[in-house]
Amino acid sequence: MKTVYDVQQLLKRFHTFIYTGDRMGDLELMEMEIDELYKEYQFISKEEFIQAKLILKKEKSKLL
Image 1 (cartoon, rainbow, N blue to C red):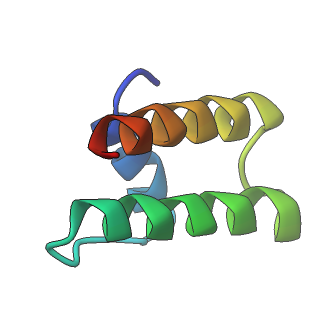
Image 2: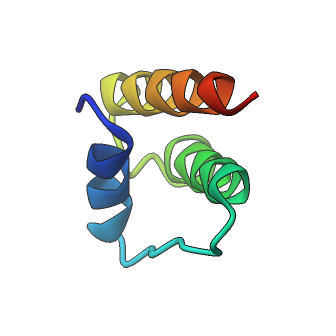
């Protein structure tokens, strides 16, 4: 996983599609979904969780 697109594909595996038209809002929603998939349901591995969080954090920092 290297890009936000890859994170979107990960979420798509669990039938989660996020597009609000607001890039920052999309990133925040994706982050919330990733947290839920890992912390509440353990549907994704720790490595996937960490990688996704880092990608989203990096992308959010570009927008600030």
